[in-house]
Length: 401
Ligand code: UTP
View 1 (cartoon, rainbow, N blue to C red):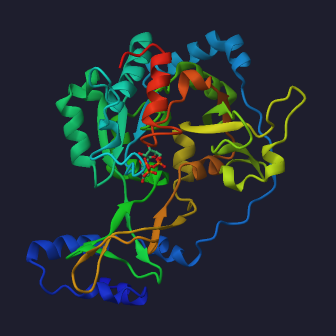
View 2 (view 1 turned 180 degrees about the vertical axis):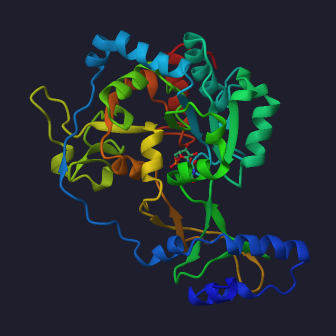
């Protein structure tokens, strides 16, 4: 079908007005129109979450099990790193709206007496592992069209914080246009769709599209992690070893929830498959349930640090993952050509989420880590999971700020 027919058939005929665009603007606009995934956009009609399956607890490797077997786990993990089987995938395509900083979230400075950037802390953590193994892990950084140039420039200007550039790659994630409450795609300016990053669930498709994997033919495992947990251990040999030895295609670092009300997604089984249930979806009676030792039965809080087998990722690559539709305030250009910053929610954004990939893997090993040592997310300026709480945790762990 021709682009024009496609737009009309999908109720987006209003986008065909291209008068007043220069040849250059028109070419870019046509590129954006050609990239629209209508299967995603048309999900605005079903914004309600799907009904959940039967929930049951999942068995985690607990910290005491890990300590008992640490040597064996680490040996296997280090062996995989030395053999070039492991890459680290940094998800840095988000907009960090809650933090509200200009520029990429990883370029945020957490320092007090000197600059200490988020990227710097993450790379320092990874370099520690590399030093212990005597080998470097490819660091694959996912950006979005909104922050790609700034992220590359920032890391280059800081000499990749000591990471060898030949082990660093960038790839750009997909964007989706936002729609108004009637499903009409919004414009953010003349010849420009209101695009935003399509969530962290598309990372593998974007990585495949970029062709990066072919450069590292020995890869078997990808450790995917969020940009904002500044204490996390990346390519942690014990985590790698435990997952590899478990025979499962996926592992997830988890922290035990501090209380039933804690706002963190929980890893459990849903109809026998691993699944992450958001805190607001977990029924209260399940959230409060405790085992004989008094520990929360549904206590495995995910911290967005997953290990995936590449073989499994390739196998599930063609499977569609759910599109989450979120009602948001979206800046747009009105019929008079003026930019409007709405005070109330005026449309929908579309995202796929990495946590939905865990379910597709069929089995997942929850690997418990000590919260005070490995979980310091920077989501907000102040309050919970903020610059303040992360600084305190970094200091507690001996980092100078
Ligand atoms: P969050 O869900 O915390 O989103 O992302 P965010 O964009 O960073 O922050 P807010 O919600 O706007 O305040 C969790 C991880 O997933 C990445 C983020 O960069 C972060 O590492 N992410 C999120 C992407 O890479 N792409 C996306 O489209 C969304």
